[in-house]
Length: 249
Image (cartoon, rainbow, N blue to C red; front, side, top):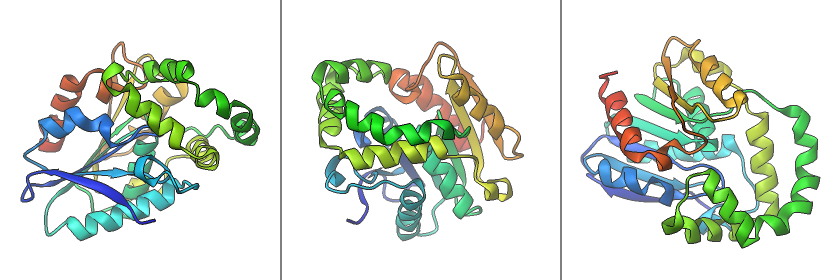
């Protein structure tokens, strides 16, 4: 199945692609879609999610290739900016590595770059055992709370969880926990802003620090926030993203 996406905003504006995290969909960016209406917004759906739920595979690399091809089709000489959350942030970094001089700026939120390969062999048996629990409504409410998904979006979150195939989930987690900083990213001209919440796992906070070793990257620690900055504090997130794109920070 080919890449699925929605377009919003100003068709003549600079391109701004918003890449969702695992287990959610483009709806997580609703507050950004409203705020950035003067940009040409592209909001894709990743493999195995939402309307692509019939797909039962997932690859950070393949998603990155798909999204770069889509941006090439839409570019028409415009500047390109990309934003990603969680596994969407890992996809952003993969895109930058594959096309180091193509993207003007990127904001990556909660990207894990410290491989946890010890956990990878346990993913498949754990998912096979826990899959019925993942589809349990009460469990889904607990998971949604961790991502700051409120009652207005819970049904969409729950539906995304119900539709996702076990194999998609296994491959997504395997890629997520195996991902490390792409080698070629050090040669990129893309300006990168890495954000991470103070309440996120240590491995995610350390990942943001790793990126700051690059000449083209800055990082910001967001106080009193866990895994879900774009949803939890959309006004602060939007202001920060605006300043980053415009080069005022």
